[in-house]
Image 1 (cartoon, rainbow, N blue to C red):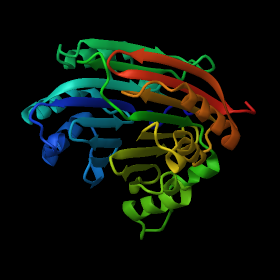
Image 2: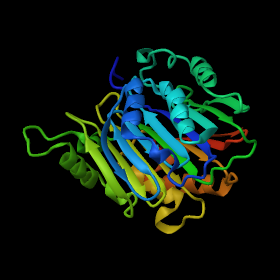
Image 3: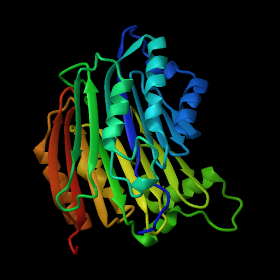
Length: 343
């Protein structure tokens, strides 16, 4: 393990709002200059963007931003100051007649925790900062650190706050964190040396194709970006569903993440277990963790077991730990850890 390097593990913030004015565009009416100012506080910038009828998707210099009419998702890696976005985003939403309904902040365990600025060196400090940024109307609150028994250094940190005791979010959110990527597979995410004809857009498209990322969801429009000399980010847009991938391929601290929003009622090509199998197979990591958040959907144990069966059969990954925690007004989180059977 390198002494220091780029921190791949992201911090993730999701804010959901009541639409008091019943405006179909909602948060999407926030102008780009205002979003750019918020991102400047977070210490990142927009490098690529795409939109459809349902939402706007931005690839950032450090991960991704998604803006729906009543929901914002922002995840940032490195040493970014994600929590500085909470107050200005709530203010911008209020100007459009939207009031905060729920907040979720989550992250894995950093590879380089000592390199993080305050308050990200301590989850307790992060929770204090989040709570101080939220209105008192979000009265149902909980912070939890879910620690896998097989690898305590790879814990999942979650804080939620909600104005409602029941969650209103119908989408199941799946977050996958992968470390120790296969070295050959990781090579797909290095820029070609001495080939100036490839800019960040064309190099990103080549990485998407060569790695097989384009086959995870063949129906999605992919907005991708290649960093120099290495690294990759993409957002996938498929109707009202999003997906996102971020890759830090350097040996010694290699990392990749995959996140998507799905429904339990999807089948066939979009079945959760099949989607995860295709995504993880791109990277062939030695360590995988999956956090699945059931919002308005009831927790489905059969889905959890099916994911474990499919990953074991297709990728040889054994589930070493499974934990579940419930959050008032914010649903249920299931956290699974996997390693290859040979380990």
